[in-house]
Amino acid sequence: MEARRYAVAADHPDASQAGAEILAQGGNAVDAAVATSFALAVVRPESCGLGGGGFMLIHRPGAAPVALDYREQAPAGTQIDLYRDANGKLDPTRIQRGGLSVGIPGTVCGLLHAFDHYGSGRITRAQVLAPAMRLANRPLAVDGHLAESISDFIDACAKQPELQRRHRDLYASLVDENGKARTLVDRSDIAITLEAISDHGPDGFYKGPVAKSILRTIKEDGGVLTAADLASYRVREVRPIERTCFDHAILAMPPPSSGGAVIIEAMNVLQAIGLDKLRAAHAIESGAVTEAPSGVNARFGDYSHYLIEALKPAFADRANLLGDACPAVAADVARMIDPARGRVIANQIDVDHAAPWTRYNDGAMTGDDGGTSHLSVVDADGMAVACTESVNLEFGSRMLVPDTGIILNDTMDDFALDTTKPNAFGLRQSERNIVRAGSRPLSSMSPTIVLKDGDVRLVVGASGGPRIITSTLQVMLNVIVSDERVDNAVAVPRLHHQWLPDEVRVQPGFSHRLRRSLEHRGHVIESRKDIGHVQAIERLADGTLRAACDPGKGGRPAVE
Ligand code: DON
Image (cartoon, rainbow, N blue to C red; front, top):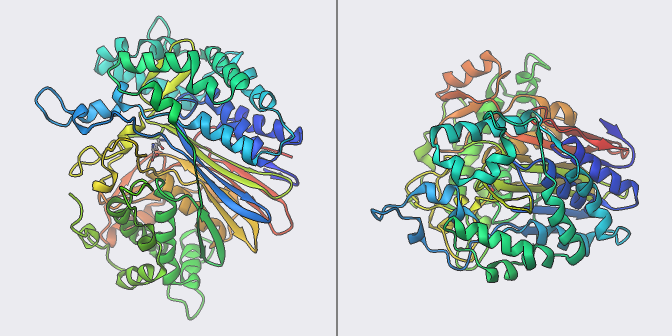
């Protein structure tokens, strides 16, 4: 979809529309992103919302970029022993759902901070909340993505009948008397919370009746989050990671996001392989040409092979070197994004053979898509926002706070409970990401902005657990290395490798010929329906905007 003035790409059409409405009223990209996110809190209850957290990256023409970390934080009373079963063994189910899986929600604090500090000042708080309020006051039509998420919840309850009782409020709101997913969901309770936020700002959520209901719900399910945890939650305002790759300035999210560091490490490896070689290999693989130009050594399958071989060390480093940005952790981003490291890794790549995963095991090592949403905005002045928010797994902790419409996150599961075992996304992690009171868990959310000569070229990000990183990277490469239009760049099938498990996931539509070429080099290939859901906007040199929502989640851009 093309536009001259502004564009909003969210993973639900009504949310994109909410942002466009605020832009039409004279708001800037931040106002629009805030309105879009509040709208998503109503219409994507499976993915994000007031009970979750997120990251927002802001590009301001002529001023320094800003990164906001409003990720959930472990309550002060967090102790690893809380997650042991009656026999003293660490029990992953205790951190995955229910009261002990809830981190202090950051979304409301983050959105209002963004609005107050970086909004245009021309839009009132009531105005920015108005589209969400309107959506809350009409029944929510269940679309394909929400229906699938409800059906996963029904299946989980069928397997473990006690879940239906434990999460009865959420169950009743999503499932009818016959045990079938509702086609219309009543989200009107969330209007009460939105009104409290409109009237009292952050205090409408972190203090007062809404906070009381949140605390009661968590306590009844065995959680330890307190009133002091809620009242003391703060946004962290940090400098984005800024690096030049392939002649473009990349603005990416620092820890506790792992996205920026992994994307830039992988890009450094690919850059060391060489732009001409990559472009030629991509052109052959996409069918645009049959052979490389003379003097360039590239064959069919090389592009995907290089990509996989760049992802392995970057994800291994994610596991070993990253955690929260707090002093207790000392995440080592500098080591990961050093171009010299990229060159060393690139030199070791054998174009005919997959590297064994053990090559990237430093010895330091001791689910599914649904719970995340990404939105991209560019306004008429060239200001841009990339924002990714999450409740972690579908419907987060599965706890719906009565009379508030708030679904609480289960983001504590993004910490490592046990460094010898993978988490719900199959990710392994080190002591740097162990459950720790007051810390924020490592995340794959990767809101990213790419600039060319100081102007926005691409705003991009995704949902999909660790596949957020690989899908965001592939769309970036498609646009800035291979000069594809953003809608094609988002729509083509993608691959995913996260070091461990040592296998390549590919989407339907990935050609048999390419599969065979990769298998021949020793890669193990598995199929997977989705490799992330990307929402992106590109800006051409003449100012034209092109917005694209991933066909897999049902979003539609709103533009003018
Ligand atoms: O922050 C993270 O890495 C996870 N909480 C993201 C979870 C996710 O993307 C689920 N699916 N869309």
